[in-house]
Image 1 (cartoon, rainbow, N blue to C red):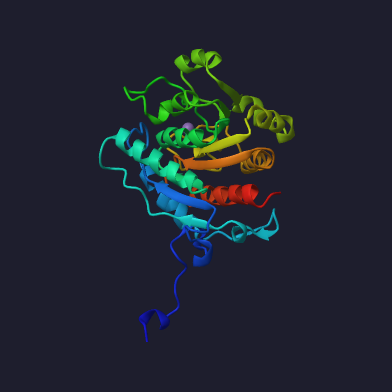
Image 2: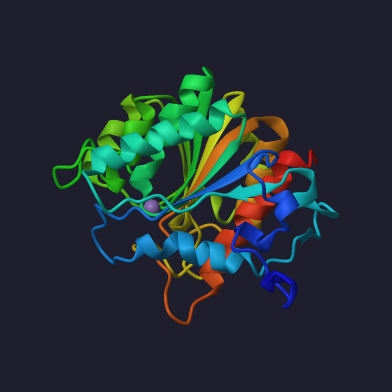
Length: 299
Ligand SMILES: [Mn+2]
């Protein structure tokens, strides 16, 4: 008797511990790509451990979506790729490889879900999506504007990622509450619309959500820097800025965008897993699962 028949198998190591038939690359509509990139972090380090922590948390999710009222993964499927090697070669080399991989996923008709890792990985992903979708815009949820021309000599730094992005396509930035004088001066000249945290966090979402949606083009790339959330919800980031968004604000926003625009790819970045705090890891995993439900379960 083959040994696998003699004991009960643990759930597979894929995102959300899905049964294999719903996690095959050939049939899954969403594909999770773990990218433990950490090259230009400046304050607390450890975001290279983010993808593994999100995957571990995801395997403990309830896959029944109480809001959509369905076992949502059955309607789309999620394949999980092995983590990308990110420590060898130059940062530019790693970002180029990521761009090539994202293009291949999009050409295969997949919805890429990239797990970071530091935020610099977003620019090559947006470039890949913009090649396929000519009217792309980027929705960024973040505490930081990330619009510096360069940071510590790196034009590809995490702190410059949205500057690189707006060179590719327009952006809408939500939850912003930290930036430099240089960025504040540059903003009026850049193709970006900013929704400051100070202006939106105390308002009911109905007051600003429709405006964000209206500012987005028909195809949208979604980048979630987890520090866009208030540190009360996600303490595990490298630069936890007070005064951020909450769970229901972010999910309401993503749900509205998924209904009225076509989200074509996403990343969730800057998780810095902390011993003893699994709430942050779990929020990241659940946010991804919820977002896929909003996109593919057509509500
Ligand atoms: Mn940030």
